[in-house]
Length: 342
Image (cartoon, rainbow, N blue to C red; front, side, top):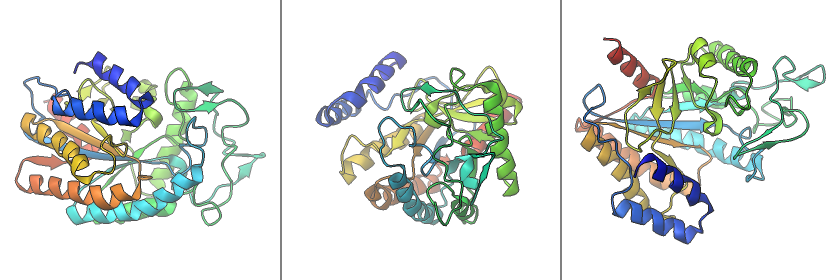
């Protein structure tokens, strides 16, 4: 499946009836069209396959201007329930994750200044993209400007602390401060820089240095600002599902994404779902390339309790056999940059 066919599939899939979605995807996997694989005769610099997990931690921030979600608090509450369960599982198998966290979640409280929350920060102008519509009011109208006890859906410092205290050494990454569209079309340079600086300042208060960016809704842009603020890498869709990292024209490492855990075309079939995930891992091992699973912690409970334990055990066993490494996004970028500058 080349890039054009992959894009067509990506556009058509969401609008198809679920019964057709399932049949189409099963056909693509059965016939070998998916996962798409970079057959270039190069390996990851370590000489073995790499598995990466990244999680977009957003609570209520991601869905407030969503065209499809109707209850931001519902997904936020589910995320709060799932994160401790996920961290326990990652600890059992010592699987590090890149947690891309909306910067506002580093806070446990905030208040209004001059009648507005975060009045010192620039605002996006009104815009519409394929995910969100921001057409009236102030960008921070949903911000309760109180504290984590009263509004746990909007603050997440306790969850940041929980990730930091894990036995497994996770990475904490940037997901913008207020979950903005980061593209050049909808994000002015001064807005991009202000959002990044706010995230960096809050992270440093926790002893965290941000190096990795995950663009909200894959709205990539402002790469020059990203580079100048000390970031080294970001997640993005590349030509293949199983691929190698690339270095873009700004010197940033582009870490390919492979598969979003959550919207399974296999329904609630444990066997079929695990079959899809294992196929990605096996193909990465076969080609000694990178597979990148990403997810939102607001997953359905059955995925957290049924799918994650099984696939983490599968990865653990393959790593123990010496067939793959499990790395954070920043670790991948460090290896790639070191290899390219030798």
